[in-house]
Length: 207
Image (cartoon, rainbow, N blue to C red; front, side, top):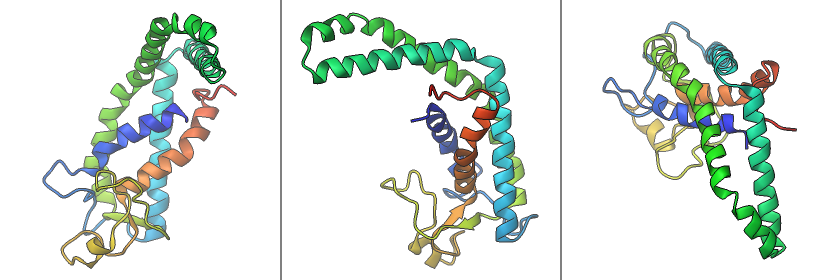
């Protein structure tokens, strides 16, 4: 799995909360400046692309890509060898590889820190844009999915409106399976992040 997906997932969790007293997922406006489903979909996607480009630029500036890929290649190679030795029940080889566990854990921690450092810079602008700009521009929901996307149990990471929410006249959801503003931004970011990272040469793909 691309580590960037994990970073996007972590970064998106606070976006589904309204810290100004609203309910979960209720970012948006009753009378948005940008109206219409199609226009809203493309406009939010545009914001997602622009913020991804900004994230990639910060990442390129702050992270030594050569060192990061060297660490990734080394740690993944060790993990692959270790798993192969365990499957083959080669205890001697596994014991030899286990001696490098402390070093590999240190390398993994360094890789994590290198990846998280840019997020500390980009997170504040993202939050400011998401809470001060986007709610004025868009409605609470900006797209409709043909199927429900709430695959994670519970309501901690809810992407689409449920039938119960749509039936509640006081809820921001008016249509079942409508995508919340933050959810469409999250999906748009995932869709374009890999392309942008390849174009800016900040991808963590070793192939």
